[in-house]
Length: 357
Image (cartoon, rainbow, N blue to C red; front, side):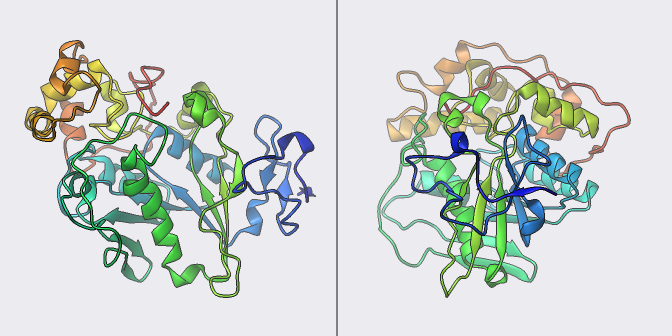
């Protein structure tokens, strides 16, 4: 495998201090062999651990399949954004089970992590601290945080913004959880770790500016942690068509929400949900929909500026729904095959993105 110690000059970042500038990290091995659209890629064989942040959505599935195509068997980390045993609030009930079934189908290890109480606890936080993080490990369940920190209140919905300081659901429910799980596992001391995530430039103007390869926030090469952590977005330059093509080639059954008509497998009640998504959710999950509507009234703060969740849903039309698929999406067990004999494109493919901009 041909290796290069430097990116091409056009690929080198000039402003972002968090970006991995290999001129300052001569130990980084870069390979052209499996490059995507001519981009340089890390030498995957140089890492001790490859971890995919796995949501169960099409892009994280594509990342896993792309790694498997190159002979790399990653471990999968799934963040249960509603907590562990608290039931579902924002998310699809089937998501965790789907992720487990996917991992089992490909013989991969999967570890779940969560913030105690999930996003609902943070949403309802009133004069309290940020809840601790818990994470599965090969030896059990670890915990981090929750004992110190600022006491404050939330009682406001995440903002429809790219800024993670105000769109707190992504940072508190996923990104910070992932970081805590790496930082608090001694098994990563003295290791080279590659973190893989599935953001694509095509998704939004903001994501188009993401670096393909950079230092991860958990990079800590000093004498205590001795942890080298790089962050790779292998499908950043892919089109949605290319994502579905690799899923079709491996005949992977997509998350049930795609078969319902969703184009993204984020939370069911994602704050970016479009009017037809909300109209559909009101039809298939009326009790939970009403809870969201009641909380808008309680907070005096709506998810969508200038309109209640009911008013937004009123502007949309529910998707045409298959009752069996609805039942599967609302179940906490995943009962279908992951690898299909006959693959068909989900009806939600190429639909309304309804995600971060």
